[in-house]
Length: 232
Image 1 (spheres, rainbow, N blue to C red):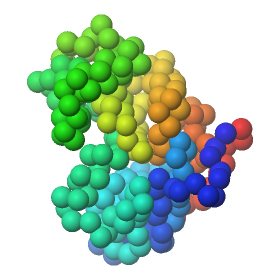
Image 2: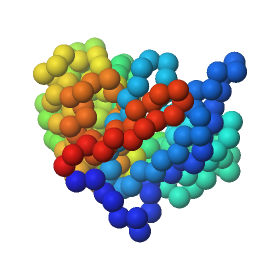
Image 3: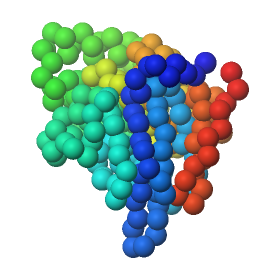
């Protein structure tokens, strides 16, 4: 069931976000909140503003108006370095095209976020082994991306997104480049690992199948969205 305790501090809170490009309003006073462990599907046609919203929520782009709080911190008040540090510590990202570094093995790709945040080597190795096992690719730890299937690469990308134990995962069409069987396996993996680690997630998708792992959906239309709660 979806987290619903109003006394729980939200992981993410957006209030009256506005963003326009060349006089075209992409975000029109968008507001919502996301609780710890909650999974929300974000749907809408191409060009409706989903990627713009993700960029604003991650602090990569700044809205023209409105505020975003991530883990209790007001993104608009942070310096560039402070925002980058917050993203490294509190955000995990999973994309349609994996974005693994081709010169690193599966284990090294997963380890990279921990190196960037200064985690000790013994702790890094322990976490990497734990997640290699969790995503079912321990036997591929020394494989380079070009040696792996699309499904294996996405499993590595998910492990990399989780290894620093973020508060929030932003997943942008994570099954869009996979066949239906592999996509279903990736959705099951995202659901089980998000539950295991208590991580909130925003899942941008066109896939109806992806809705089953989310607690509610947000449908974009004309720069705004309407919420539809998914029955338990």
